[in-house]
Length: 245
Image 1 (cartoon, rainbow, N blue to C red):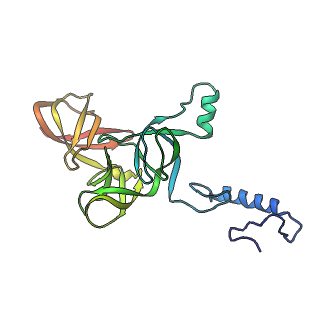
Image 2 (image 1 turned 135 degrees about the horizontal axis):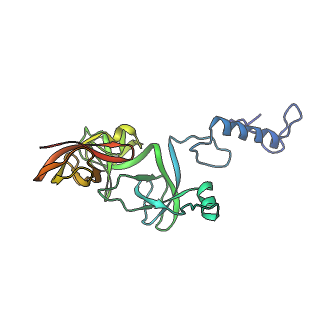
Image 3 (image 1 turned 180 degrees about the vertical axis):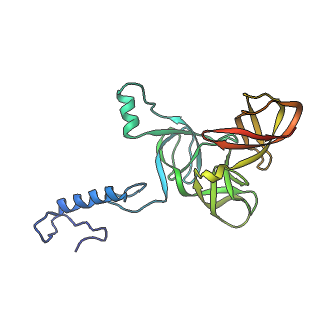
């Protein structure tokens, strides 16, 4: 009898005079077409699906399994030619990751322990389990801080489930790179703010969170001192959409 995944053991007969090797190759081709290997882990031939999208990352700081790394760049950057660097990037892109900070907005979750200077797998999209610091029990999002992930009213990850209670070390199931997770943020900035320039905006809801290089496309804002504002993530940048007069 075939294995539960449809494959045969070497030497096992199959009616129709087809070899086990040929049958298994046909199974591999079917898996590829149906996407059964996308985002999978395990032994060769495994079809155990994972709910997240992963890639490799070289860590500049040791991170435990389900810990967080700031995405800082690429280990090998492609060039304008078709040389080794470009071929390496095309074949298997490898991120670089470091210690996150309160201004980190691009981050990933280690799905295995990674030592400093080593390469391991990280989740960059989809749904992944992780450890978070729960600030308030009704928080819906997670954002990155220096010591890991913290829940709040805004953030780059949407909480699907989390352990009850508050404090650090709580298990959570988070959807990464959720379009709705960015949303609109309420913050503060230091006036004046000229049209066409960028400023840093502090989150008025989630402490320790700052949004760098927020662009003002619309009007000159006069005055001085701290003023309230609202910002939104549009395309690939934060922009000012409302400001206190």
